[in-house]
Image 1 (spheres, rainbow, N blue to C red):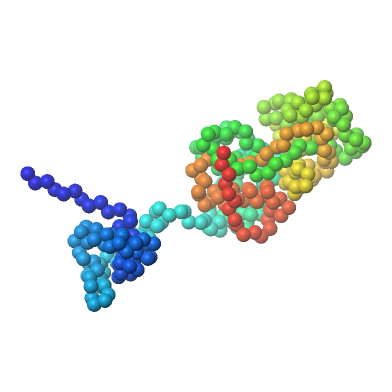
Image 2: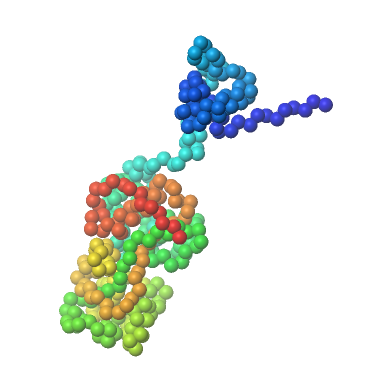
Length: 328
């Protein structure tokens, strides 16, 4: 009974060794090229000779010359190695100017309003083929990121699935925003005076209470919330037209101004420090891990990073340096 021998298994290292040997016509130089020992390269040559049933390189005086079979394999071996490099190497960097994409982000209205000018400016200058769609916080972010309905969530990330990648971008504090001439702009703002004023709360779920109420409760104080609105920009507009107080995110003391405060300033609102210990608000971005190494998505994340973390000149000319993606 005849038993056929198994087909030879050629690994990627042998293909790379073949390419080096045929390029260098020398075991020693091929070994140096691949940062290995001459002995190891001699073993590779012996294996290749057995598999290909050809000596490949033969002595001609002090040199080695390729056989006709080796000469015929030269270009093919080089092409295989190039293909392996493209297949197994890191992804090539993406030229933003060549992108033709629409990126969908999900963010609260005040975050979306802060992002839009910077993203448009960066898009015009670096990626003119890119468009942005900013959705309200209407989808459950984890499943929406997973199934591709949104590319990036930006805001206060507090509902993270285990696989979701998250990067913190900036820390903010909440301040009280009132119209010019509001009674709270005169004299010292105390917890009691703040509590006595009428407030507008912002909640997509219609909640009347939040961290400010917990802080006031520690002083045995309670504020009156006359109305709850689903969006910050609507609350700011109401505060500009009435005597209600709304809360607005602002930069921490000593930090650069935040773009999330620009709309309040554009409405002419006065921003007052709140004399209470309120928690810091962290604005971050979240994405699905399948996009982590994608060049186009890396550009998107860097554009968001530059817009929110360098708000004084989001459109200034800067070399694109992809920031480190912090994961949780």
